[in-house]
Image (cartoon, rainbow, N blue to C red):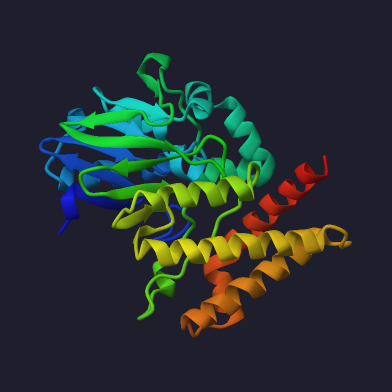
Length: 309
């Protein structure tokens, strides 16, 4: 059962139910929202086939932002979709047309070997197939409106996609991450994502408020899947953004600043997960959130350095 033609695709990145792309189907036309990495391509094409459609039935590939876990496979996917156009934030468009800088930046964080293994080489998208979506840009999917909303805070090249028909928002990473492993009777557990290198707490607060003001019935996160109730989860995010900023500011003079921030984040998430009713240990939390703790700590460190500059 796919509510209003929305199909959640597990891209297979890192582990199951970690990284999502979406297929939105209206009539016999389709749009992908985000696409995972090159290794995700068979899963995306299988989702299309399962929906009874062919690659030529796809009109759009819409990117929430150009971080590689969401956009790394864009060039390879577009090569399979003869009629599709790529919709991307104006700040991200050049990285899809010429991905060399994107690759270099990510390689500096992860290392060349990891990049080759996790992502595969990035294929450029022909410039004539790329549309730069300014704030409020409306995509027509067989009469169904998908509206691009500028939502900085996680990244400056970030947009969320408001599906007017379903009244849901595809939030990329702006509305945090929520892994199904933490779900219980209290609902989903959510954590902000402050990954390097463009975290901006005030902008992120504002972007979350903007999305909530549209009164969507649910959010579709890239990490991972559909979540609600929206207002409660937004409040959780606002509280944690402030707490994470406080942890970072408290660490700015620590000799091992990065380690101090990681410890603070781990303690924060463990406390909140336990308040949520999750019964796991610190070690079990780090199995699920260890990568996010590391990247969030890196992002907070970059933010501290910029704040000093």
